[in-house]
Amino acid sequence: MVRKIITTGDGSRSIYVPELDEHYHSVYGAVQESRHIFIGNGYDRLPMQARAVLEVGFGTGLNAFLTFDLAIRRQQQLYYESWEKYPLQESEWLELGYPEYTGLEKDLFISLHTAPWQTESEICPGKVLKKIRGDIREFRSDRYFDLVYFDAFGPEVQEELWSGEVFKLIAGRQHPGSLLVTYSVKGMVTRNIKAAGYQVNKVPGPPGKREISVAKRIS
Image (cartoon, rainbow, N blue to C red; front, side, top):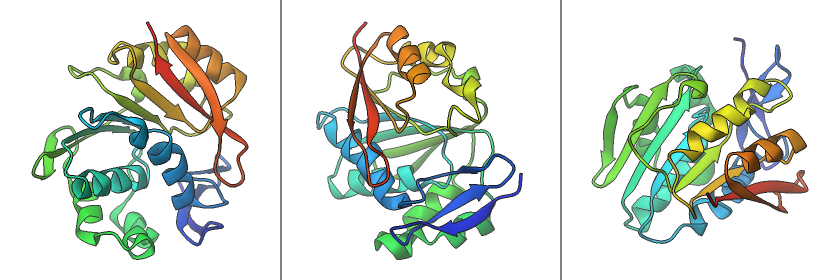
């Protein structure tokens, strides 16, 4: 898969995949999108004691980077599991320059990307990352997750990842009251999330996107 590094509207970088005509982040701003959707409408909504996160699509590592930074600064426990079928090469994630753009610790960013796949890694005391190289349609876990970042490629190009079956697999590892947040508000997506046992609310999105979806597990 050919991938190109691009600069988005807020000055931060992202990746474009020509064969899919798909971007890893909003062209209006990669970092501002991640902070608005997954941090502001996801991580920041969790109770202080609840900190088990499942991410669909590790991608550039940006969501993990911002989340681990907050957990460290807030002295919170964190378990973070991320599923990714096509990991980036070292040359790609280094070129993104997220530590330089955000002013956050470069060593943390490197640690997240160099952590081994398929196993738990303690990134720092009380903060654990488990990266799974695999297809989310094969999702299995012994853990329950307080929050899901659903950040796969869009349903227009990978509809199979947004199926009712996938959301049901995830719902099976979330207790009532747990959250799932995604950038997509497409009708098919919200219907599949609701059918899996969530209440879906549309909330204001980041620049360039009118709305996003925040779902709460209800059954």
